[in-house]
Length: 70
Image 1: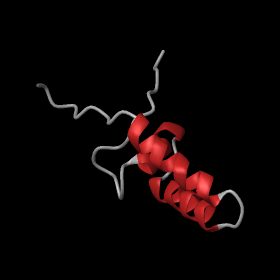
Image 2 (image 1 turned 60 degrees about the horizontal axis):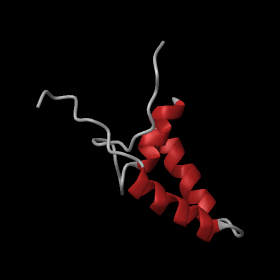
Image 3 (image 1 turned 120 degrees about the horizontal axis):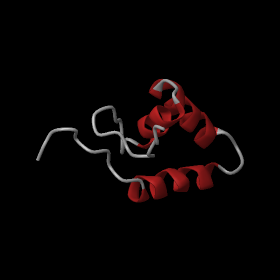
Image 4 (image 1 turned 180 degrees about the horizontal axis):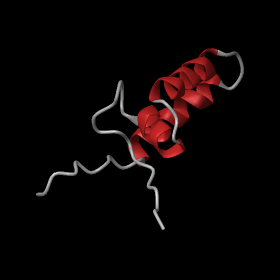
């Protein structure tokens, strides 16, 4: 059984790597996830909450491991 772990992307990031990490976890293209975040923030309504969720995830999601031996 393969367990997936929700982590921020180390290599494929624009701001904090949250969107790329979520995209990898969900198995979709990171560009699509970034577009979803941008549209959600720009739409009227709970856009401030969506922005705050991104910031919280930026601090709470762990950074993925480098994969290189230490």
